[in-house]
Length: 65
Image (cartoon, rainbow, N blue to C red; front, top):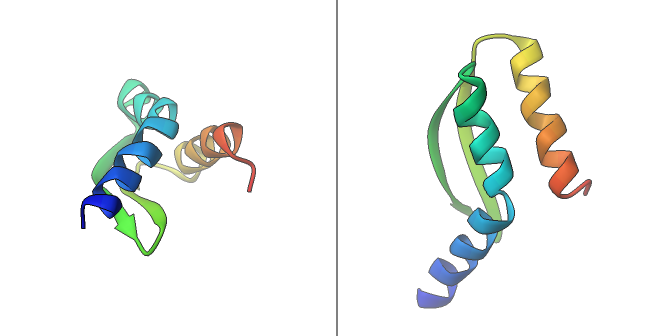
């Protein structure tokens, strides 16, 4: 279990710019951040399609894949 928690922390650090963007823009309400399998899962509620797309753009800046 400790290895999964370590991986979660690594991915949260990697995607911290995305989480910061979500908090700064105020158009997406972050619901939770956790692991699903070996991937970071970020769940939120966007006020518009445009707000959602801006978050995806930030994710792609961190890792296009």
